[in-house]
Image (cartoon, rainbow, N blue to C red; front, side):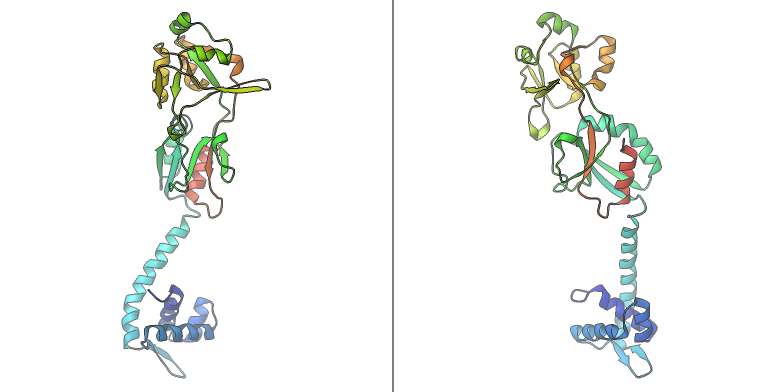
Length: 294
């Protein structure tokens, strides 16, 4: 098989089993002349005669019988493997490697994991949480989830969350000591909790009101890359924090956090699942999209 492709070996197997070029050609859906040519090329290539031919029959030589004994199970195994891989097109099975930022893992993926595992027990969902904007193709992932603004234009994107609304929050104690900012530029005089998005660096807080939009590079005593730390630090009065309304909601309801700059915090498109191409898309990935799709 080092020098001869599967079609030539399959041709030999068919002729040896059918004892006829005509029947073997019909079995493989080719012409008898093409079958005869393939066999001549195979025998000339390996330098051994594999078939004895008469005007009325075809039979394997001793060398052909020896090859046949080894070839039949090998080709059967190859065909079984191809059938199994081909079956992944229609049956959700196998492994799906997914790259997600931690916020999407907790808000988009986690609530659907149980449903996905129950509906598709033959799929292994291999999830990597990473806030860096990695190249999913170069890193070997099947798909990723991220904010729409970060997804490259050549990717296919499917919405998997509702719009998100950011909030700026602080503890009552912090606001009593430092006052409430009235405009985004006032944040430059406040102690703020910075969030590092992996290799992308520190996140600039983004604001929008009417036709005005701007971003502010804030400063403060703490830089973290974990949302839970942001929330705990804000509750403990370390400084103002930028997070999603969904994450802040229970603490706003309890009074542990207070929202500021409400008019400048407008909703924006949320998370999208993205992948390189629809061509020959595995059924397992299609199943994941169906479960997460909004």
